Length: 478
Figure (cartoon, rainbow, N blue to C red):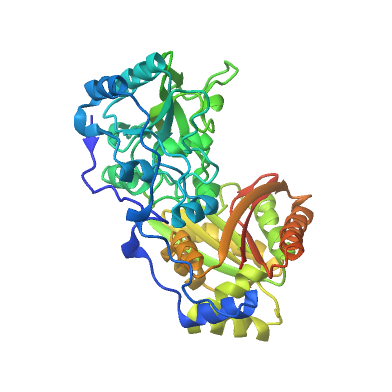
């Protein structure tokens, strides 16, 4: 079967993130919080992006013969050398990328942007590039924050970007074995729309969900916000089809298990597009959950909350772990309560009355059948309570889920107001978690202080593993 998803693919605003219609200005309370936290004189919108029409790039250096060969593969309308298209493909969405773009600085841009419509067209395009000495950059949603879509020319005669948006089909679904094969250009919402029409979900919701593509998920070894329940991308991928300069390459297997090794699939998942162009992948899928049960708990410190998550992972009944398991440190929790409106403020006051003058907020979502999800939540609650947690009900978790993809829009707003925002992530074993958390936080603040900056750092645990957890930091400075 082949299913086309007809919803319009969103185009990111050129200087920032996502659909500008989804962006919301910061409320007065948030602005005041920024002023006091960063000790700023003003947070006026003093750093707007330049006008897009004022950005200039070097002329395309690709020769007419190469262009003709590329157009012979895809058709004229699917090869572009327009400056506007080249600028939109000149980098990813890291904070340095956005600051450069907002300032109108585009030192490197691809010579052409090509929009293949099939794996066969990708194969033919790569053959042209081998013959002509052209570098190739695979481009999905363009959400890379590690330079993965930068048009690096190196010693090549030119560079083209392969925009994969036309490879947007669900190719096959096996509801009995619970697998699906999808093309690499499908974005997160389109993946879910296609699978949910059959009663299934991929269950993969990274922060970049609204913009990122399946190929990007695989190429970056992505982890979603519900990966504690559904698994990270390397747990979901069964097989991948690549097109390489040497020809097509299929890696992985539809078999449920194998004793053969080494596992070549592990070399592809997380390869950042360096080994070939991912055109499709077969993944494990899950039935749509019939029920979600939400919960939130507060702990007197980040360390106490982390120990509670460790106990939940080690002492809980197998399978009781929430699909979403997230713990904020005291700084992130304070910001959440401060900016969350009167209901969040009431929760903060309630916790003070309960003896928690500092709070670390844990958010959970259990998915599955209603009876099953509620039973897992009750069993988990016993562990949280023994670990010193105070139950807060479902509201904080439902509020988080409602706005969980809004963070990048807030970054755009802060950059416009002259506030630098960056994120970074690491992981540590349970034994080293508290020390790693403190060392990384201290290193960031120390570096900012050395440059005379009044920085602010907050962090949270975003994923829980048997032997440790991830640490996701957000830092702000002026």
